[in-house]
Length: 315
Image 1 (cartoon, rainbow, N blue to C red):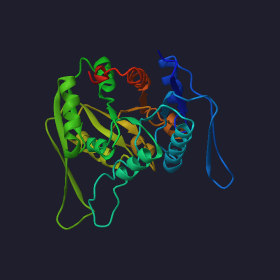
Image 2: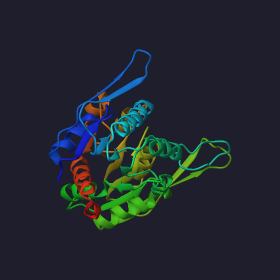
Image 3: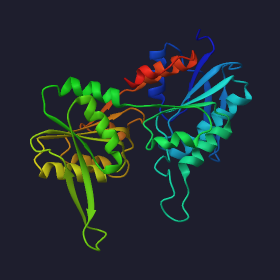
Image 4: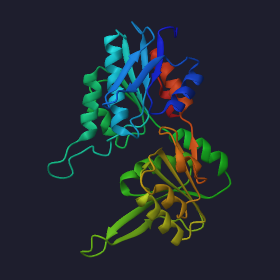
């Protein structure tokens, strides 16, 4: 049944790809991927993929442009090697925050990246926790949008089963996401409300809408980049008497001074998935706990290959 199923990966997150391969019971394909001295990327598929159903596991994480270009080149190489279907497993979809024209003369790069992937020759995209669900509509090919929420739900139920919990959205834009987690945990919901004071654009007042005093607060968002907004909300929760403060985000970009900011914050633990690999100080930080999405991706890959529903992954 799986003789025509092939898994390959680039350099963006090889540990995740190897873990997915172990869960799926299918070895990673043999490819050469390197850079010439002039910084151009080169890919050669060493396995025979003619007529194969190929899944490329390649998040577009740091270095973002290199990861994206490697993905496009792998797609082109597979297309020219007569792969029957090319499926792009993109756990972290870069440029997703540029999903609308909110200023004059700015690009919608989330749509541009979707066009690049489609034109390169991809037949399907599997991704995790898009910044905005409407990005699925930027593609003219099928998109399977998976969620890390069931993974977080199971984990929090195992460690916080006796505590009084409130799920907190850092802003109104993520309220639906936080509400869905609160429903699964059968707990309350609070929302961060940012307001500017007078004409001073540099001054921000932050209120928390909802009851958080004496409760374990779980800040829930899709992505943590520098951590600025998340930590401001955590400080407000601390002032309003939250007994413990955790944060959970699907994608731990953790750029700039994110780790230092996290270490200095009242957040006890930051739970992230392994859509993006950790290295250096990010890997050493004791506040960061990484949960794996490998089993979920492996199940999705095998079910998509045999044309079965993947709805079981949303329960």
